[in-house]
Length: 255
Image (cartoon, rainbow, N blue to C red; front, side, top):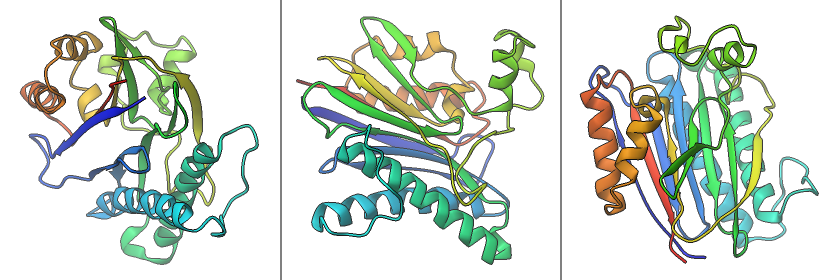
């Protein structure tokens, strides 16, 4: 399979600083979105560390097969999927240690969602930590592929509130799992079969909190160029209030 992609980030309408970051590594087939959190500019630092660490690890591992990995391989995953998981864990450790040794960065962290396409003909991997999301759009159907690691989602799973009530939930910003919280982190990773025409959307909650699934689906259903689609999604999120930074990356299966 071949893929086309496009990504863009925007600070939104309420915040001066953009703590989101994203990366598209076409050669490695890796697409990453990170949503930083923390005081001052620490969130921006955490998301930047994530993007750079994953990119450097993939590039180093590709150039030198004997490069030392900081974590053991998972035999149930492919080599490239292990690279993705290890890169995320490596980023987590780097953020945690920076936060532990520099008071300016105390408490910083970031969510992350990533897709790996360079793994063989008809499959890809999705990895995430936190509430940045991956969606799949195909045949006018939008599916959320990731499960938020958030207090809100825990309440929904426990049946304590409904998805309709979640709109007014007062603790939406409480994340149960993120990079930088501990020296090690559990990364959710899944393998998915793919087919021609599917679109995978990576985004921060600046998009998913401002647009409903139906809103997102309506934009994707227009089948416009990826650049135009990304820009329309961001414009609509800003039109609905733009309360947070907004980052969107689209990946289309071209054949």
